[in-house]
Image (cartoon, rainbow, N blue to C red; front, top):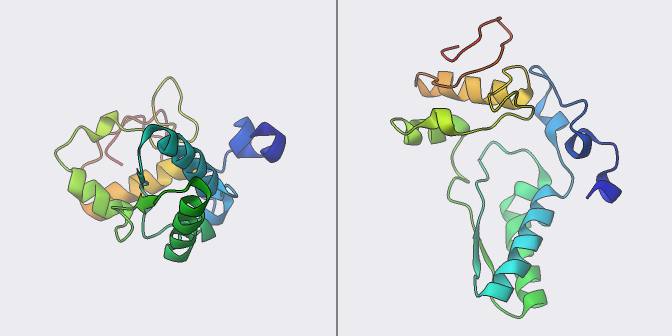
Length: 158
C-alpha cells in the first residue's frame, strides 16, 4: 500500500502519533475496507464466508459504523457471488470492557503498541495511552512492560 499511502506514518513508521495526540490522528483511511476486502477474497477462494473483526464501540472512524459493515457485506457478497458476513463481537464494548473480560488471561503477551521497542510496548504512543487508560478504567492491574512512560516508569502498573 506504499503506492497509495506514500509517506504517511502508517506506511513509513515515522511520525507515529504520540501519547497525547487525539484519536483523529490515528485514522488510516480505508483500513477496514482494505483488510476485509482482502480477507473476503481469500475466504471466497477457501470456503470461508464469515470474517471477524475486533472493532470497539469507541472507534470514531467512518469505516467502523454498522452502516459501513452492512454495506460492505452486501458489496462483498455481490462481488464474490456468495454470502459474506462480518462478525464484530466487541462492537458494543469499550477497551476497558475487553480488559475486564480478559482479566486472568496473560494480557502481558498481547501487543497494542504502534512503535514497540525490542518487542515491548513503548509507553509513549497513543495506542499505549489507550491501553494504560483501559486498564485503569477496568480496575485491572496492568501487567504490561513498557519501555518508558509519560511518567518515566519503566514497567507496568501505571
